[in-house]
Amino acid sequence: MSSKSTAKRADALRSIDSIVQAAADCLGRNPEASLSEIARAAGVGRVTLYAHFASRAEVVDAAMTRALDRGDEALESVDLTGDPRLALARYVEAGWHLVDQAQALLAAAQRELTEARIRELHAGPAARVETLVTRGRAEGVFRTDLPISWLVNVLHTIMHSATEEIRAGRLTSDHAAAQITATVLAAFTPPGTPVPDQGLRATTP
Image (cartoon, rainbow, N blue to C red; front, side, top):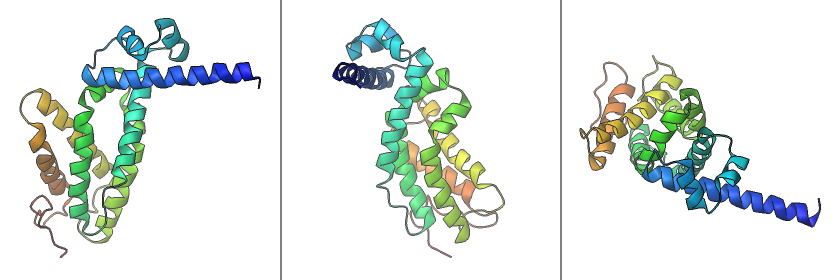
């Protein structure tokens, strides 16, 4: 590859990176931000933007992918050892913080992307929860009568539903993590077993 081609490719990669970052910033403030706004924020023209992304959906997809990749990196630092119920509470606390920060971007994704694509983008966080749920089932503190995939979906659905409750004024961000944890623990606890108090004082039976 010639030095000229290499330079053009480097310029293209910089443009793409600028567009994706601008999309994350703009959509993170306003889920209805236009492609013109995103292009201006990225310091490129609409022609350049469309040279790399064929549609608004592709721009939103790229921004959401970046946000989730960075969020998944942040979740790597969450301690998921010890009592699975306590680990779940820690995961919800950290995960909600990330979801709360990306509420507007998520709203844009829900408008532009299919549910299947949104689930696909959440594969990293979902795998982390699947591992935790599997361990909790093996230790007898999470129910085994429902599929793991269903339980993982319940967690992420409740977490995302919290953003809708906040937009409707029925919930505040600072109370969301506790309510999500209480709801998820109730859903995960084996039938007939007392539900721990949000996992904060849970002890292994």
